[in-house]
Length: 398
Ligand SMILES: [Zn+2]
Image (tube, rainbow, N blue to C red):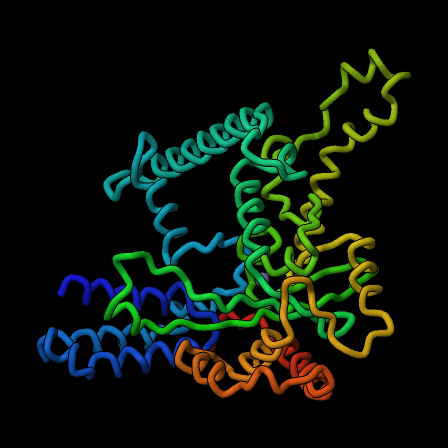
């Protein structure tokens, strides 16, 4: 009974925090409805209880544009926050602690308190940033470990490691697909019914390279770069783990938190002392303030373009495909797997049962390389259409 409640809760919370497309959302909605009419569920839950769940789901669905995760997939810098948490944290800062305000205070007092509270928080952040600047990160071996904040580096390391679980194919010079169809590990306690009834989706990520005003970008359909500010595991899979500091959002730079908005007084005394020896280095330091502004501007500019990448990486990927007529299959990826990924991509949303049917219907051994090529030329065109179909959801949708 308890397990059943927990499972239904997970079901609904996934609609609000994990589904990635409208089709997945609808599929999850319909499968929960079916689940509630299931014989075993009927035996364990009363009619009134099942009715209440149906009503709750209808209620949530009526607010789909606010609660559905697929609307927030490309929301910038939200760090995968769940629905109302940013609001709650603002609420908490205003109503609690030594600078708390309440409805009995007059306006004068309220404003002063809120301002003092904000200043105190800014100062605290600055102090923390200063501590962070002086820290060494021994937990990572990443090349960006000295310039990223600890949290950022940890996220990067995680994505960097997880890229190894993925398969990748370069469809043409500028598009890629990345996938991993391995079953998720549910843990020992969650193996049986009803957990096995939860909808699981198999997804193929589409990535595109493009250039804008002489700069190069890579964009992925999962939206992770937009939400979190670091390249996703799919990009790292395509780039074979190559990263540099410019790929990260400026918020994750150590220097940004410490020196943002400063009028570049850094290094002045040292400048006078060692002007002859360290001229070039000091010039670099002296423009740090401007550098941070321009780095931030670059992040704003790249808002809808994806993850910036260097000219070398971009050309190496493009050159990799030169004069090829067949898709380039990365090491560790099989042709059969590629074929399956293409089939999954054709579906708007692929549930586990659909996936199993696909696996059963594909006769892998009969597919030769030539067949694959003919098939793929058509598929590549379709894949490109799908890539272009990825749009950022409008703020209001009725
Ligand atoms: Zn991705």
